[in-house]
Image (cartoon, rainbow, N blue to C red):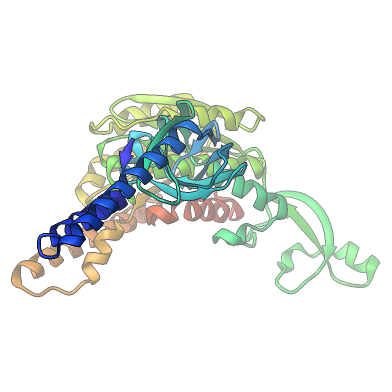
Length: 437
């Protein structure tokens, strides 16, 4: 049993009344009566809560949570108590969520069934352990509170963002990718597979006009070409210490993992083959490019267990193993994080070797917090120096992109929260320009 704040407030009020009896004797008698009433009400409420209360609660949630997304959790409650109850529900959340003030407040009537809902946003992959459901109940008097332990302990695995993947699946079914910022890119070349003949519309390439069909129909007709299929696209993820930098609670590695999962789905949906490579100090995971129905499951399971090594990444190991295992010319989407121009120069020879045998797209992360700091005003000499250093770091990121471009390597500088959309747009752009393979 827990005594509520209302009980102590009432007790203090009674004490003041009894103390006033020192000045006016009848008030002491009134205080005694009020004290007896308070004790009687407290005993009565405690008896009701412990003898007449029947309340059950259970947790409902998915077997898997999606990394970085809002995942719904429900607490189903049923009351067989013959009077209305006030509730304070505390669900023992996994320690990874770092939520220490979680509490749901509500009321439940006699014979009522109620569902309380909330969401959790995990920022780490792995196993999350839920504890018991603690329900604190009281009546309308609010003097005494009883704790009831309900529910069972649950274990939930947090996977890369499959909720985001389902969103893209729905958009693919409706052909409405523009909802998340994915652009439609008109194909420039015509060195792809023939698909059909259609009426000419403004914007079609004059070189695709089919003159025989035009003569038969007496109107302009053009050939429609589909992009070449069965090209290989590998997501190559750097797991070195620089990928441990965090943004909005998630590491750059987790952003790369989420983007790789969605990109792999789009690649397979475009009839290309998706594969996966991870590396750090040594070559780690390798999934050959394929477009079978089981490929997405293999990629998701492999991404689930990836962790940073907090060591330096060895690009020579990556270069050696990719050139040995990937024999067909492919698109390599490399997620990494060069913090300055010098770190790029140390790895440039290996990037150029990869780009000679494959088409390489290097994805580098832009530091949003650094950009915000640069835009903020400075008020003293120390602040000026800090702004100069920050501007130099931002300049070196742009210099890295220019250096990659000068060496024939495609680069993409993007913010972590826009990574998925920007990578998909870049893939679709390169595919439309026949730059893959």
